[in-house]
Amino acid sequence: MSNDNEETTSSHTSPFEAIRRVNEEGIEYWTARDLARVLGYATNYRNFKNAISKAEIACVNSGQSVTDHFAHVRNMVDIGSGAKRKVEDVQISRYGCYLIIQNADPTKEIVALGQTYFAVQTRRQEQADEMVALSEDQRRLYLRSQLSDNNRQLSEAASEAGVVKSMDFAIFQDHGYMGLYGGLRAKDIHARKGLKKNQQIPDHMGSDELIANLFRASQTRQKLEREQVKGKEQANRTHYEVGQRVRQTIKDLGGTLPENLPSPKESIQQLEQKERKRLKQGLQPSMFDEPTEPEN
Image 1 (cartoon, rainbow, N blue to C red):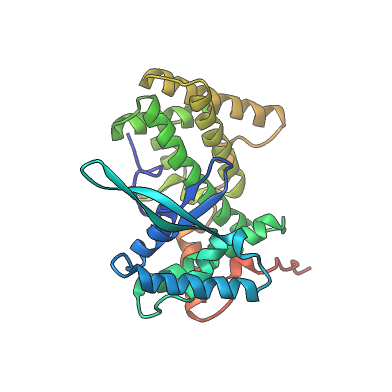
Image 2: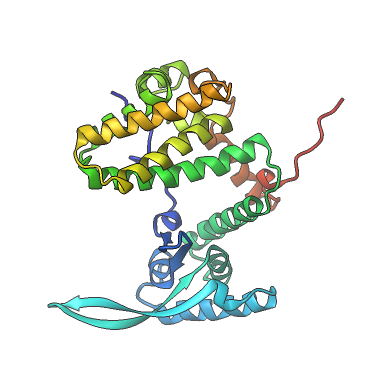
């Protein structure tokens, strides 16, 4: 059984995405301590605080409210032998992280990577918030990122239900695919798309297929949590049933079933490579350009 299809590897997980947190209200944020560790400031937090201060000034100069993007807090941490102490920290928005990265040490390679990540992700979020009409490539890049997030959350919910081992999770994912794709397993979808062994199925989905899978993953995760599903068999059954319902909804609406949707000519990796090349050339990423009118 193929296990290439979902987020069981870190090929799509940026170190900055890995430390992203979400509060009880569903709002994402990063902590200064986590960010400092990733950026190589773990042993010199004082210097990192300088970058935060500069970022807060930049925030004010850009007309934004500092408190909307930088929340100073004090957290209890373990220091050994059951003892704890309070340490200062900052909860930072995506835009706040972008400003910090711009004021961090540019000689660090990870800082350069962070500049690209937060520049791209911040702009992506702005476009999504503004409900800008995106091109197909733009939608794919945005939705692929969302599917990755939801698959990680689904993996956590499945683990709580008893799906622990890698093989168990591959079987669990297969049940979701079988429900949504009319009985097709991951290996079948992989073959239909003509993919190589190391290629992941979601990287070769168009926006409509990504949306169907995003809805399937999101609704399964919610159902597992809401009904407190326990046991691998019940979790598999839940994933299959949700996939079936999403498929039936597509049928009822007269839409194209996912296995019949065409695969894009370019993979997500190819689109990302194009954006990285444009960034290196100092150009505005094309996934954020306004769609051009087709020629007559």
